[in-house]
Image (cartoon, rainbow, N blue to C red):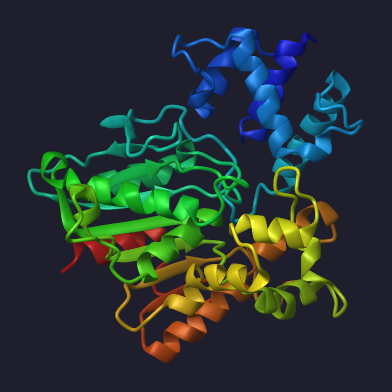
Length: 399
């Protein structure tokens, strides 16, 4: 296999696409550019050798452990090993709550407006589908998952898109900057806020009702959605930038497999110990770029200099910590029961833990104490709404 084909296959597989090992190079390029449009630096619709080299560097930056011999270059063997691991991970996580996986664009209705810029970075773009209606329509904004390191706006579920549009709800799907040592959390959260405000600033042109705006997403996207929903108003009325004057408040929010808290003690006592009383929560951590030490990676993740600073930033972006009685209703879904046992496949354990229903239960206990409307769905639970779409139709369309 030619090296350039292998680079393309590796990138596609890690981005969540299928592994087209028998596809032609041109077909691979098209799939890569659909999932990673920013790779085409010169905008000619093709990948030059320099652009392929940049993809290679991107892979190495995101997966430094793949460089087994530490020479700073991914050999063919190292890329093949990484592909096998990515395919295995995708197969294991097929039923997980995280929505960073399958591309949903095949056969999809084209967006009314595609790749609308809301910031300077190449990932500061969103697509929007406007519902056909003579009256202003509600808007549901999808925020993808992927651990703040992967995923794209193309992960919006096609069936959900179609059902919302059919109901008369416009839909948007955003990209945001990935977390890194130079763009730590809460950079993705702030990107989502800016995208929301830009959409509101175009409400008249796009026939959108500013007072009926919702957000939905899975995993990391769910965390961003909850931060938007439960934060106090972040508009700046006196700003010279008219976009910053737009409201950031939501009408309702829906999440799947969301991390409702970033509190290390909660994760240690309620999540990590599901594997046994002596399990250390640090075993769930991942390197951040070339930062492999768990404690240093945690500080870099939040752009903090001290553990106390990291703890405070994490608290301000935890739904359980910031939710209040005047916040919008939430629909949460998780893929396991509270009494479910950990998977026997070690490769699935981390995904199972970080999407555990205990996270939803913690938020439900807090919302119940506040008398705030919240719905928690998991296998066997008795619940009013069976889907995000049903919840949105009720909250955005019925008065």
